[in-house]
Image 1 (tube, rainbow, N blue to C red):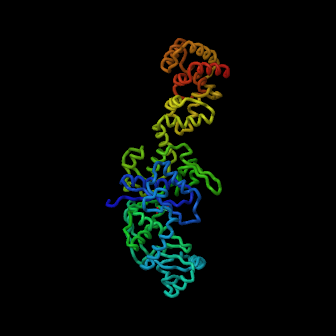
Image 2: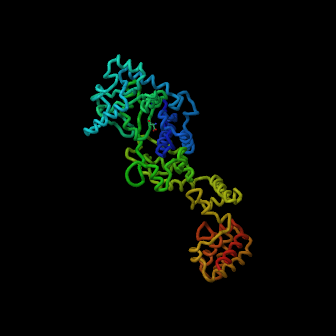
Length: 505
Ligand code: GLU
């Protein structure tokens, strides 16, 4: 690659960023980092009707949370800004006019009502109205009207749009890094609007002009933009600019059934489709986010990386650095990628095991504080190490480890029935007495003593260990019982046994 790689993520701030958008950003980021390039964020906010308050901040926070920040964009000016299209308004008209001058675009004065008429007319005849080569000479535009008429209309400030003049009878050769070469017959293309009567460019014009001015070398975006590729290609040609390389990423599909993954799929099946929680500024409706559900960004990033790409090896766990090293656009799939919420959990389970115990302990400590439980950070961290393997989300820490902090407040009825028999109370009372005689409560030493004691009674281990677990934990769950006893200490262990004997009489 000759010039420095520059890619951009160009979302429209019309609401929260869907995880499909995050994947687009991720692939752009990986590609940029791999080639020592720049990752630009451009906010495409030319459609003021669809602008949503807070969406831009949400996009930026999402990228930051995922650990894939842009290095150039709003607030990070690097000489190619401004990076919000609404702040670049004045630039676009000049380029639209250039295309008129070169004969690649034209003014069209047809009113919305007139176009509606044409559409209806066509529908009645079972046809679709397309504004292009086959009828543009008959419509109201600078190709059909005399120059004088056109000037009169412009002077009279009549509403107009500027349309691209798609060529007739031409086969375009389009290239896409992922999809390979494609041929498009220009006769099926319509003359897209580039510039609107409100003085704003459409997506197509603004997007191409900005990619050019911002020196973008690779356009990596979702498959939904593939139908625009022919027009974009023709625009580059009309301007006489070198087109960037294009790569259209596959759709993200529903876990079940056909079609694109939607917000509703997530709601129905109970998984987020947004990186962060989002509160709709108008309706107040809240949509779940991966962050707030307790997912680690590493898990979300690893999952997204595999939605449409694979390294061609067996390896599935990839930290960001490894993804950067392994990522290749050529290995992105053409076909849609089925979203699998269980797979995300699987990644999550892996990364929570990898996470630093002290960091997880911070999180657990916050939960404990909410319950007004004070505990030493070191102690919490040691508990985390013991119960971590049973945990998928930080919120599971309490369920898996409450008994390290409080005595059980109840005894699971089913488990108690299984573990606590008629003679258990007596036996546990004896055990409590025996424990009083033991000074060293470290798990290993304790285990030896208790085992010898059980053997001397000539009874099965389960007869003691199960009710002991009920007494210390309140249910038949949790890590090594001797570790629990060591952690809560001699006095508390004996107290809990006596309380269980009292309660389960
Ligand atoms: N503004 C478009 C979007 O919202 C950008 C598409 C592109 O990357 O060209 O996705």
